[in-house]
Length: 268
Ligand code: KIV
Image (cartoon, rainbow, N blue to C red; front, side, top):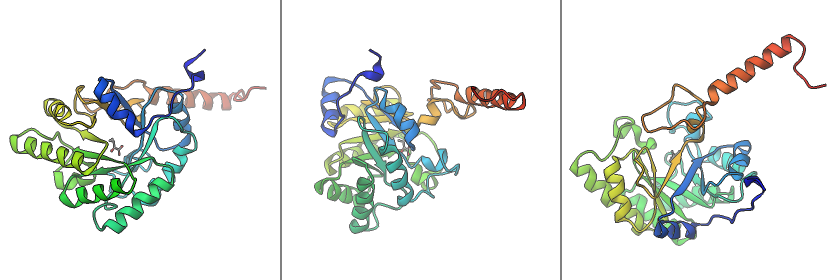
């Protein structure tokens, strides 16, 4: 029997606390479409995030700021069509949280109605924590996100590692605890110094999911197209390429072009 034939148990929110208690690491990946979702469904992945990184990966923009709630909803529906087993999380895009509780509820509600089983929210200001608390009390599970928050790239002064000095460390520890108290079931730690990420993971009851934050979080997330090596020039220090798809794809396309020229491009 291949792994593809094995039916896995549906992954649910309460599994993550159990996994943290038992020291079982949580695997997470981003995805934006049905064809990749079908492949992830065949894997052992625990969490799929329809990230607003689709602004970079799918739309070719240089930040996540232009992504809208409607676009998130569209991509969540695409992924949902081919995904059942991993927990499906939808990212709340720029300015979709925090303006008013009513708007936050409507935006999160739309993502849930599109097929998400939880939403992810960047930031931990008192307004955001209050709204996270409101969402969680109304049955919408929330994953937090601190450290490098791409929606705040201009305020943070660029894509740089977070938590280097004492005051930043204290602030991040405080933010993580506020998010836990607000009801988050897990927190993404993006580009945080590995020592601090480890300290935060130990200090929290809920799991941490790292990206660019070392190997001592309770789980890890990567952007799918990045880890598949679809752009060989995009290689931040922390990123492992598990495939070199850019080369394989361009090579296959050139082979196909040659076959078209030689009139042998289809099986007969
Ligand atoms: O938008 C995204 O893909 C993310 C992950 C990288 C954590 O926020």
